[in-house]
Image (cartoon, rainbow, N blue to C red; front, side, top):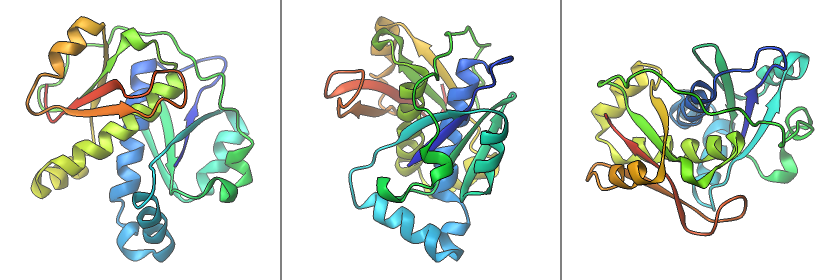
Length: 209
């Protein structure tokens, strides 16, 4: 799955908001109503679920960002930060408008978000791994999918009705280690192809803080 982050040069978005937008866009693609009505959408997801699930995160701005809005996918805006996830496809079939976008250059500084909403799911990131914004976006995208898969259907329907609202927070490793002990935690381990060691526990998602 390709994910594109809008990162304007003059006014870049807040990192935690952009990561939340990325996570929401991924789960929104998976649960979009077109998965039931559009054969291409449905087949793209089915083929992806049956193989090793990977995500590639790219950046765009200005006209490049506007052009990719016409491709099948879902764009999410979180406090002005925007991300778009596209229906999955083999690497050889990625649309040129997306394929030519840069993978590097997504880095944004960590921020200090407000207090967590007690009614909103949250994804925690191990800040000790020092993942780039792009790498972290892929990880929270994994987490949002897995969180939905782990919850009762009615809970997922309510979450979908909210637009899959969620929060993302980066924690120092000690605090992250305490969060993963929560019995409700949905954990993501990375295959280790980029940035982190194989089997690294990168993020965890909770249905509520």
